Length: 318
Image (cartoon, rainbow, N blue to C red; front, side, top):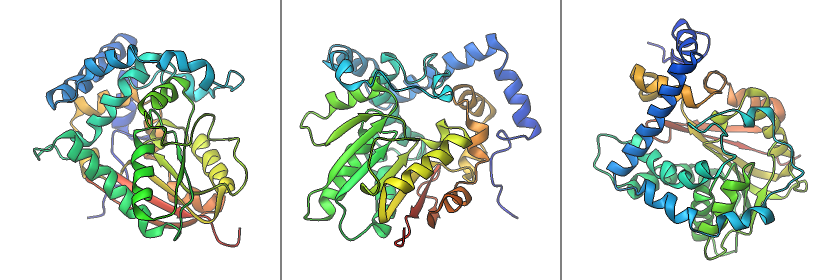
């Protein structure tokens, strides 16, 4: 039997259209949004992740005072970034999303291995470690500069930086890029030792970086938040700022994952109610688009039961 390319609840399938119709019903949408949020918090706290305590700690931190120096007041926000998602009316453009991003991120790994008695730390190491190991197979011999695109509060940036520091003797410069200055303010607070070179408020579709600036670029759990046209534009920009032989690593939900395809109706309803670009993501041919913009496609690997890792390289001759 041929494996399905995507879940039936995404795209133009009858089930997907029915789910979308339910979500467009405002009273029901509001209920689903609250339930999605409550489910995230319950999952986190049941597994020892202090959701409310983390929020309060960050609310008392210097994060808010850092916003003016981090935010680029002249940066226009794309229309797709200004719609509600992740159960927040303002999306990522608010303190609530930024202060809750850490416990929400820590809970991601726990959903992957539900049948195993793992701590969030063990699940996180396993999930990120699989991604890093695949990147390592295709990385240039010496990595000098890495960019984590859509870095949020910097958890992915820090673990990526640590991986490459441990892998070689030469120093590695890491930069985090995100559209949310709120997230970046929290990232700077969390980066207590100043290990990350810069936290940049910018749009990945058109960055401030020079041509051929980086050896490694990553998009970790970003594509599912984007419409097709934005993803393609970002791929084009990534090709420009990569050095020849450098690689782009993508970690995100796997449309072919049996776990994701067979989510119970209550769960995929909750997921779609907080992820407005789900239909576009689950029907997006990432590999073909990477080739179209000029990347040399390398591999797609199911790096864990829910997620896939995609690796592409900038051709040496470019």
